[in-house]
Image 1 (cartoon, rainbow, N blue to C red):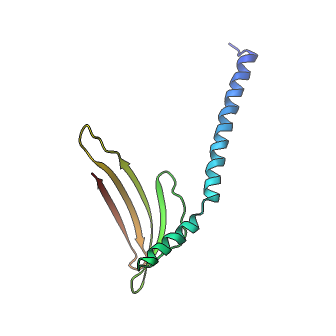
Image 2 (cartoon, one colour; image 1 turned 120 degrees about the vertical axis):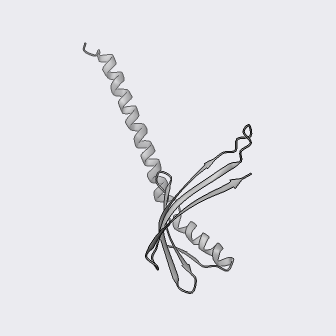
Amino acid sequence: MAMMPRQKARATLARLSAIAALVAVVAFVAFVFLTFPFDELARSLEAQVRGSGGELTIGRMRAGLGGVTAFWQRHRLGRDIDLVGLETATSVPPMPLVKTPALQLTAGVAHVRLTRTTRGTVGVRWKP
């Protein structure tokens, strides 16, 4: 059975609305990635660490995709130790009825350039 002209128009309008929504979301995400001051945030973190007596160098700081964050760090402990890796984190809210606290779970993998080794990390933060 062929679609009536009015039904075709509604279907076309629905497709165009979906495409417009997708374009708006992509434009917003691109706007955030292009305008967020990642480098200024990195310099601020470096200054805070320097103020507390440490030294930290963050090469490029970028937002993660899909919950995964890429990082590069340089630690100066007599000699430079560079770390390049990926990290992801998730959290579980507290459940008062079952009397369980909130949890923050992190997992990551990093390559240590000095020793040419790759190490993995898993962390659990208990929030009573």
